[in-house]
Image (cartoon, rainbow, N blue to C red; front, side, top):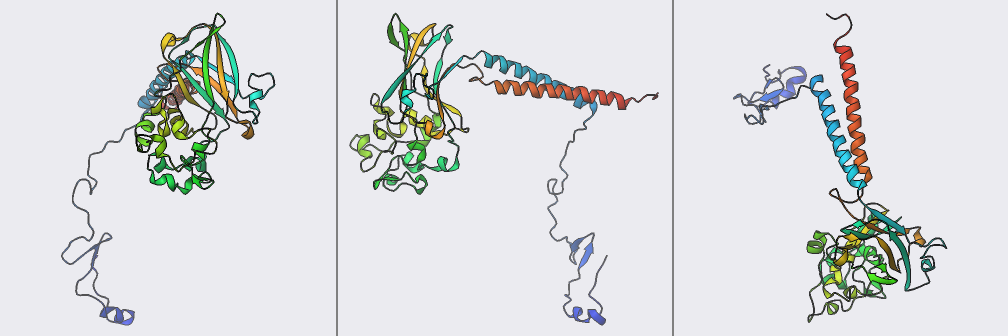
Length: 371
């Protein structure tokens, strides 16, 4: 519909004065100028004009019902494989918190006792196939708490010595110790797990040490990218930490975490890297060592064993528990019953839904009396 300037009478007389020489033309809600050009019109392409070829599936009973049936069968097959794979994994767990007086580590659970050692003896009646992994587990420990997670200085942990003297405020309250900057600072580093374990096989009344391998137990990205030691000073890592204090709860500074292996010190210490990788749940376990060497490369043979524990880490104060875990793995990883059961449940539901839809379709597609 064409529109001209308002008539010069009545209410519209004032409007006529502001009427421009160019006449506005309205066509289907889009404003056109005098030359017929459409204002703000998109380019005339297949994309902007929505002329691209499209395909929309026509979901019919002949497609949906067999689809649900096939998906259900596939999920059940995967679930059975995962369930059987998880069943084949061997796991041996033992709580050593020492809450009860009849447990081996009861005396060590007293926080006033220092450098306490206890032993857990166990018997394997079946070959524990290798490779065998040794884990420590904690419960009721919330590493996923936001303030705990950010309580660290990433510049320190990347080896930037400028932040050794001026730690980040996010490390509060573990920034300074008697006015001396703490390196590494923060609650995460300060609470590092410090129990240690030694495993022996009891053979003929003697203790045969089982070699524990601590190489490569941390994440590749943590060891090769995220964490870095500061540059050596005159060839010494200890000199790079001059003027700093160790975390309050640590017995030794970062550059002395492993006296047997100089390359496993500072921020590149494998146990430190494993601890700094936060757990998502309050009950978790972390890899401590692998048993892959010597006479035990194929696993732990049948026999009696003794696990000696240097009990240092306090957990009773916050209602936590400690445990030690021996486990092997399969093609699906560690023992996880939930994943296989979840696939079985979802697959079964898909099959049930396909049967329900088939019954409904058969009843209403061909009603009684229909020729």
